[in-house]
Length: 399
Image 1 (tube, one colour):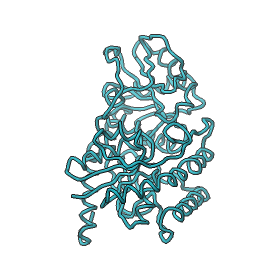
Image 2 (image 1 turned 30 degrees about the vertical axis):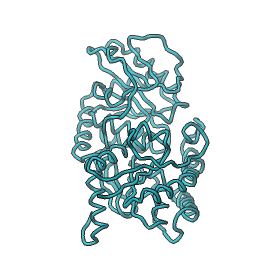
Image 3 (image 1 turned 135 degrees about the vertical axis):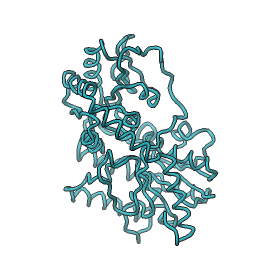
Image 4 (image 1 turned 45 degrees about the vertical axis):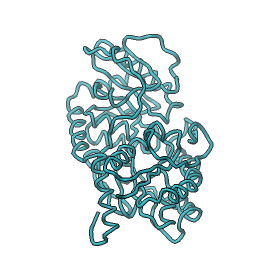
């Protein structure tokens, strides 16, 4: 059996895909463990998971940097790297090293945003596979921006000098052994990388270990359901957008009902409403089974989970990889893009009408979803990790 250590940042959207893979490896008899934030991993990885704690920067809830909501574009990218990813790597590195010493893994599975995992692995001479929970890095997101690319490379070189092996030169976001991309070319287009083989396994969609209660009796089977969500990392940016969504959906109450996810309570405490249900959290996978459309921020996990269920989207990207993912949705024909900060109820209503009334969008969503299912998800990812371990044990074989 192979011992696998999974290293993840304190971000729900990055833990959930890895959780399905780790569960599959464990079901096959492989010893598995996690390195990360115990408070987050406990509910997501399960009560029996072995979790080795890692420190995270003390800069907000869960240790995540609280980014000013007005930041967009290059300013948001600068904040992400300087105020979150680099401090996170430095904070996590001792915990990752301690986890390696105590658990003695054969292979590490490292999220792209938990750079400490890759740098500690290379310093200790251990193989690692990359867990890529977004596809933006594989589709030329920084093409035409050589100065930005060089700036990120400089930050990574500095990190390597402090916590990694200064003699190495590869990009720690791309393993030279294996990268698992939780998507397929039917959504992304051609996929390329900077290092070892990339295996597109589709999203690792699996039942959540925990989920909030939901008033299923509220849903009217005679009306289509629309889910509106901005994810867990954008609670401070969405008041105007969610308000416009509520207005657009109420105007279509004769044929639609809406569930709006509002974890930050930016909509206040709405009175009971037969047409629009506002909740701080929802069991998203179960709700997507009943949804006719999704309005979201183009977060990679939300997009992939919607398309897995064949649900078309209205995407309103805010920052980071979201504009890239939104472009993929539109290029695939699976949805309509609107501008997050400059879209009112009328435009949102038009976009909703388009994805609901034009069958081409649902057909495209189903086509992408079929490619996701065929790719194998967590099962196929575990296959690739097992093949990597076999190749490392016998250099004559290939992963």
